Image: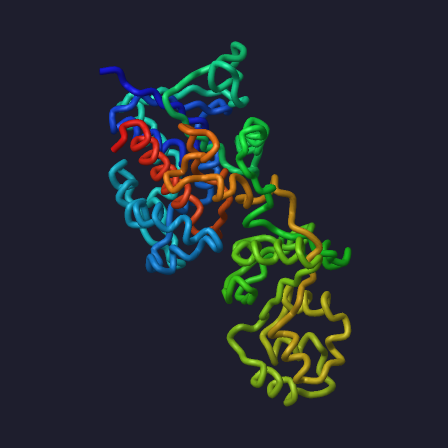
Length: 403
């Protein structure tokens, strides 16, 4: 019996997960990647500790994908956080839950896990071809640019798993949109996800505090309320607390032309207590001492208050307390998508069947970050990439076998 041939374009988590399932199901699988090695963004994500998923209750986890949560539900149910941990364990990688609920390999590295994964794929007969860029379609099938020139391949089915448009130097450059331009596939423009923002810092503030972490603060936005830390950068703000709210802040900048990062500089104290403590202070005390004794603010936190409201020292206790509890940092624009951890935009859900096949191109499937969904950091991105890769692989198997 002749094996069916499947071409997977893109050697990231979505593509490799699809390759694992399809090769185990008996199909002949070839993975093509434009970079010299596969899994480059996966390896970068593991430089500071590979966050593979999150341990929070599944109902909460499944809602982390915003407007795409409903569309991703079935894929996440079929391959969720517990499945990710079991999969890693099957590759000899023990995991643990950190204090934030994030899940990491005990070794805190991506490279051992990737090596074990590639070894499994090789044992299952998967062929990996590097330095092969997908160019689109030709009369003889899929066109690929290789080190030896252009070739064409005509597999029985194919999966595109190119990623979005963040970190283009690692392979996700978004150029695949050109190859789909004449197919009737609707593609939303790419936008930075989990990104920092530009702020018009004064030169004095920038010189003194760029690179400084702002710890134990809280942010409230349409994305909810969260506490943590971020970093003052040369250009503005970045870091995990900012990323958690970046999607709604970015969209507000796009649709309304303005957005504020609203900070609670003293999340452990309410406004009434702050106002009372300020009102009891000696009127002759310096403003720096008043902030330190009345609100526990000093260093970069006190400087942020002065940066946003230079005459904050003249405010009445109630007004000063209110400002500390809701300090608006005006944002100018998101940082460039090339710097973003992830991206929004890509193939619109309306162009994709429930089995992740493109409606206008029978036999061609899509998965991973090249589809128009996004998620915060915390293991959600990686889990959903792997889950959609598996969902697409099952769709391919059903399409080829009729089962």
